[in-house]
Every structure is written in C-alpha cells, then in structure tokens.
Length: 236
Picture (tube, rainbow, N blue to C red):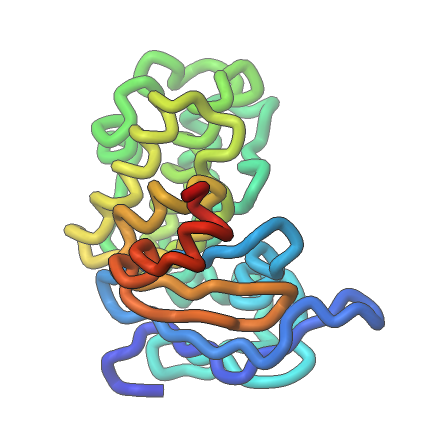
C-alpha cells in the first residue's frame, strides 16, 4: 500500500460456499478520487463492495484502509473508521421518517461533518418529505435518502452500488452529480454503476471485472475511449 492510497485491495478472493466470486483482485483508491468498477451482471462488482465493507468475508488477500488492515472487521467497525456503504436496494427504514433515517446514523467516521441541514441543502426534495415515512418516497427520493444517510456517518470513503438503478434520467443525472460533488469535499468514492458511460464521465479511474477477475484498469478517459470497452459495455 502506497502512502498516497486511502484504500488498497491486495490479491483479494471471495466465495459463496464453493462458488468463487472474486479471484485475486487488486485495486487502490486515493484521497478525493472517484473510481468506477465496470462489468456485466455477475462480474463480481457487488461482491467486491461487500468484501471491502465487511459484509462478505474474504478467502485470500488483504485490505488496507488509511494505513490499517481492515479485512475481517465487522461493517459497523468499518463505518467508524470512515467507510460508508450505500448498497443496491437502498436498505432504508421504510416505517421511520426521513429525519429519523438520517439521525439514526453514528457520526464517527472522521470525514467531513454532515448534519441534517447539509443533507437537505444537497437534496432539497427531502426537505419537503422530512416528516414522511421513508417508505412513501419515490425511488429517486429514497436513493437521495440512502446517500444522505451514508454521508451522515462522516465517511472518508463511500462505496456506491448501482445508485441510479430504477431511476428516471432526471434523477440519475441528479444523483450522479451529487456523487461527483463529493470530490470537492475530499471524500473518495468507489462506484458500481449500471450506466457505465455516465460513471466514466465523473470517474478519475476505472477497473473492469469479468467473471470475478480484473481484466482492465486505467484512467476513466482511456477506458471510455477503448474500442473493445465501447463495444462490450458502452453500446458502441
């Protein structure tokens, strides 16, 4: 792990029972950087995020964050170190109000401080829904709430899993724009996103997974310009 790396994944493998889902994956995320993880369904993208956030134990390799080895730690411990995971499906508390969903988070991550007012400034739609139960929100509003809740933990690194899934083009643009703005606050991002073209527009670098293995890495611009990537993933 270089001193300039915030996150370093080194030779990580993971499995679901006897089914190997990741094979010796290595990647880094630097402070203030957006790194995109690309690949088809089943490539291992969600598995990788789950391995980093402690949801899924790894079977080989090491993971370091801010100079500490973190593989084997529980998700709540990693949250307190400064890693927030905004999972696919959002996993908000539908029977609780928007405000309660935001306030339930422990803010010990060591990153920039976000209060409820800061989240409402970022997502004005939530200001109108503050006292509503989260389950009554639209899909786009729920995604805003999930992002806001992740930021309330004061993360230094946020793992986003398919943040635009099921959203309209308007909400997709708004949500990805909010993620891009985190860079200005010094927050790093590891982004799994179905809209790969949009992800590459806001990312600094990208890694490409295929059936659990890392097959490509480089600057987002170079990855987006590669003819084979365009043909396989970008609809060219």
